[in-house]
Length: 208
Image (tube, rainbow, N blue to C red; front, side, top):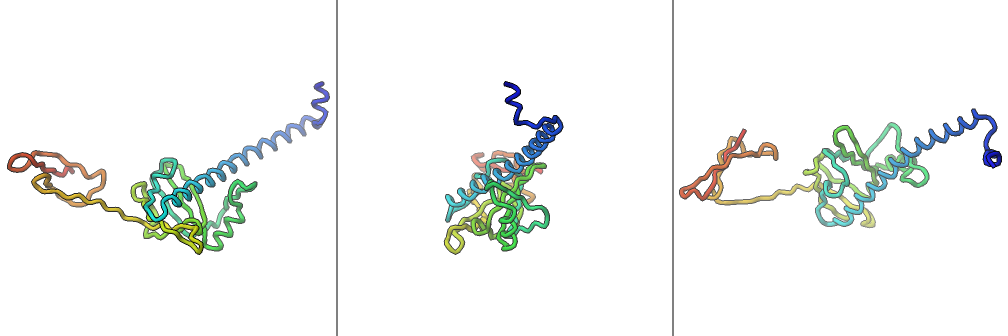
């Protein structure tokens, strides 16, 4: 029985080992390539679906990206002179498709960074294009308005959106003692004291 099972294999052990090694190396290479390609395709689909759902509304990038990130860089009309990712077997776009998009000036890229980890997603400008005055964003600043875009309105234009929230109150309720007027989340630290003629108000004194 064992003889029949081994009948189809080469008789020389060296040939068998070489075949196994070749298969192993190809499996490792294609597994990483498959993972990279499918990860990009899934992230692109997630982003495009979220943009569709927020058409004519406001999109917060941090609310739809399924992993933590510290900075995002948006590159419009991305050009890569080095190696271009190739995704065969319809895993995602082929190298030829990506190069054609670059030639046409239609390849946009978002690179998400967290510590030493970079995650990249690319897409055609016919799907999602940008109108920006800056290219580096934090999770708090990556807020965009969404408009239909393109000849058939199947694409979307994301424009930088500045959102300001204002609150006002009487100085008898809350007053301030400040040495500056512009704050970040880390610098907006205050001591609190009772304030006013009947001690019903509060004085916020900046702590530096």
